[in-house]
Structure formats: C-alpha cells, structure tokens
Amino acid sequence: MNSGINVAKVRSIGAAYVAEARISQMMKWKGIIAIVAIGNPLFYLIAIGIGVGVLVNQNSGTSGTGGVEYITFIAPALLAAAALTGAMDEVMFPVLEGFKWRKLFFAMNSTPLTGTQIATGVFMAAMLRVAFTVFCYWALLVAFGVFSISQSWDVVPITMFAAGAFAAVILGITAKVTKEDFFMTILGRLVIMPMFLFSGTFFPLESMPTFLQPIGWVSPLWHATELGRHFSYGYSMSGLMILIHFAYLSLLLIGGLSLANRAFTARLAK
Amino acid sequence: MSTAVEIADARANKFGHQLYAGRARAIVERSLLALRSSTWVPIATGFVEPVLYLLAFGYGMGELIGNVDFGGKTIDYTVFIAPGLLATSAMNGAIYDSTWNVFFKLNESKLYQGMLATPLGPLDVALGEITWALLRGLSYAMAFMAITAPLGLVPGVAAILAIPAAVFIAFGFASFGMAITSYFKTYQQMGMINIVLLPMFLFSGSLYPISVYPDWLEFLIKLMPSWHGIDQHCSSSHVSFFWIFISNLCLSRLVGVSNKVNAFMAWNRISKRYLVLSV
Image 1: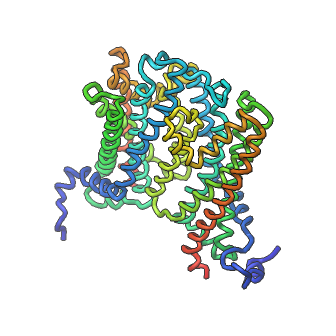
Image 2: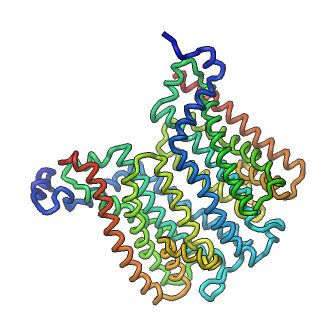
Image 3: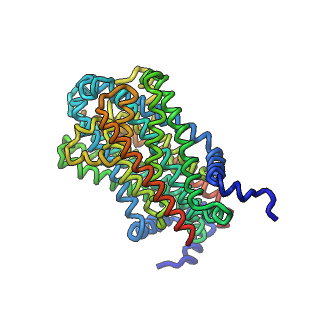
C-alpha cells in the first residue's frame, strides 16, 4: 500500500518536504525565535551603539569610523553577525540531531529522499529563519533612524547571501562530525567568538596589529560587514574589492554546499 | 571508610533525612574526576571569552576611545574594562556550570537520578553542584587576574580583593541560574538564559560607564544584579579600599539572603522531580 505518498513528487521536490518538516519544528519555538531576533539587536544597539558610541564620540568624533556615527558604523556588522549566528544555529543543531541524537536523516533516507535533498532542505529552512532575523534587525535599524530605507534596503539580500555562504560551510563541516562532545564548545568559543570580535566588527580591521588582520581576511563576517557598510551608508570601496568580497562568499557557498552534498550522501550510505 | 549502607543507616530518621545526607562533597569529588577525564576542554575554553573581549575592546577600541573619565579620574580604556571583565569571567564560570551543565545532567544524561539512587539527597546534589560552579568561577577570576596583572591593568594590591568579591557575585548567579534551569526541559527554553544574560553583560557598565545614559535608563540598569557586581569591581580597583570593604559587606548580605531563597528553589525542584524515584 502506498497511498498518500507520491514517489515521483518526492523525487522531484524532496528538499521542499525536508524544509517543511524543519520549519514546522521551528514553529514550535517561534516565540523564543522572535524574542531573540528582536532582543539581541535591541540590546547591542543600546549598549554598544549608544553606550560605547558616546565614548567614541567624546574622544575621536567620527574620524576613526570613516566619517559616520559609531552606531552607523557598527550597525551593518551587528546585522551580519546576527544573520551568521542565526544561520549557524539552524544548520548545526538539526544536523547533529539528524545524524546523531535522533537519527531523523536516516529515517528520511529510507523514503525516496536522497542525501542531497535532505541537505538542501535543511539549508533552505535555515535561510528562511535568516530572512526573518535579518528583516527584523534591519527594520529595527530603520526605526532607530540608523539606516534610511531607500539607501539601505539592498543590505537585506546581501546579508542573507553572506549568512547562506557561512551556513553552507557549517552544514558541510557538521555533517562530518561524529564526536560532537566538544565540537560545539570549540566551534563557539575558539572560532565564532574570535571571528565576532576580530572581523572589523567594533572597530576598523586596519586598527588591529597586522599579524591579527588575517583573521578578518578569512572570516566571512568581515566580508559580509564590508559589503554591508558599502551598501548601507556608502562606505567607499573600490569595484575590485566589492568583486573580491562577493567572489569569496560565493566560493564558500558553492564549496560548502558541495561538501555538504558529499558528506550527507556518504554518511547516509553507511 | 563507610559504606553506602552505613551512610544510609546513619542518615535514617534524622530531620530532613530524605533531602540531605551531609555528603555534598561527594558531588564535588565526582566533578573533579570528570574534569580529569573529559570536561577540561569546555572548562579551559570557557576562560578564553573574556580574555578575547579584553584584547578586542582594550586594544582595538583603545584607539577609538582613548581615555575614560570615571569616578573623577581619567583612566586608560583598557584599565577601565579589565575589572568588569574579571567579574564577567567569574560569572561565566559559575553560570556555565549551574545552567547548561545542570540542564544536561538533569534531562539528557539523567546523572542526578543515579546520584539519588545512592544515600545522596537532592540538597546534597544542589549544594555540591553550586560549590563546583563557584570553584570554577574562582579559578577563572584568578586566571584572569594572573593575565591582567603583568599587562599593568591592575592598579594596586587592594584589587586582589576583587577575586573574593567576584566569587560572591558568582554565588548569586550560580544559585539563581540553577533554580531557573531546573524548570527548563528543552534547548530552546535554555536559549532564554542567553537572552537574559546578554543585557546583564552589556548594560552592566563593564564596557562603558552607564552615566552615558539618560537618568531613567540608568535607574533601570541599576536594578539589575550584574551592575552591582561590576560597579563594585570598578570601584575596588579605582576608588578606595574602604569603599569596597563597605560595599562588599552590604553585597554579601544581599547575595546571602537571595542565595538561601534560590538554593531552596533549586533543591525543591530537583526533589519534586526525583524524590518520587528515590523514596
């Protein structure tokens, strides 16, 4: 008996089914997701944007931040950081759950769904969450008067793109993790935290000692932040640099997704 | 060495014997054993976070901010943030252990069920876990001091009193964190802890003096527990020895009272959930 399952349909749009399952999972926690999506930017803007902003203004005015208020300077960086971490949460936990904790991916794989479709579905659902986070954050920045709608709307898709690139890499790496005991701790504290602090987020990358600057160059957050600054308040940047930022993020996106594709297929075949 | 049966016999029919066996140290001992074999990685890396904040904000922001006027003196920005980050370090140490670790042991590994199958009572478990959390907070605070002192960020010998002060604060957070955690059943609910802790760190005055805000907002911030901790720290390093002595006294009384309530809440919850199993 095979009523209710349209095999041909599952074969063609299986990823959408996986995404749907992920989204219905997320909807159980929509209240908390919404509180985090609004609370996090609000706290950072008031604390760092205004609080530290006063100190910066008293000391060096706008000379250290390329002629804009400190809050405007950090806004694109905070937006990108929230998008990247939100995306990471929605790929890392489901993948650990799917392969290890509840082994949901193996159950999915026993239907006509393939590894590639499962990976794509998880990624799609994560991107939806990112779209929500980024939009809330951006709307709050506009409400605070930090951004103007007409000048900064294109930051929303660009930040989503950067978050997608980062999520793809995390998706690929997490799919290969078999011992997760310390994976989250090490990733969170030794990779994400330094990336957040040393990617030109709170101060220009150039003001760090030269030996620390490579952290920024490899960090997707730095590329996302630079693009965000350019497209939100017109931070000046050469066409070549814009191209480099986009190329680097595209490389991460494609590399990450193909890694995820191979890792999912191989692990499900075991 | 007494056997489990002897301990249980000695405990039987005494007041509160279902809750407390006077063996909280066994829980601490267990944590120490776990530290040697497996938990040293998260414990060691947990210390890194405030140090990274110190490096990034101290040296990166130093150029943008320069000096800060605080308590009538002009001080270097890095010197300004160091004491606040010391307190944060101690709080982090205590909070990680009393929230996420307790959550995991309660819901995932069911470690406490095993403990309660022995003569240990729920109060032993709560006290033992809080003690361990405080030891972790204490070691973070000492390590942070050991890093900042050679960098010239500790103004005087009196600042060493910041360490016991930080542990007092950590005590308040650890027992409160544990009480709250005992109510949570899923990872998503635990996410609420992060969103409550974030403003406590950001608005605590550790990264900038809260006098930059309008009066009403300043008042709201002063209602938060972490501000008292951080303010006391900044003072201990910058204002006077006498002042911290007084505030330490006041704070420890306050923390002491709230801790009794929190510790009670914590073991009450654990006992409600597991006493049924142990009786």
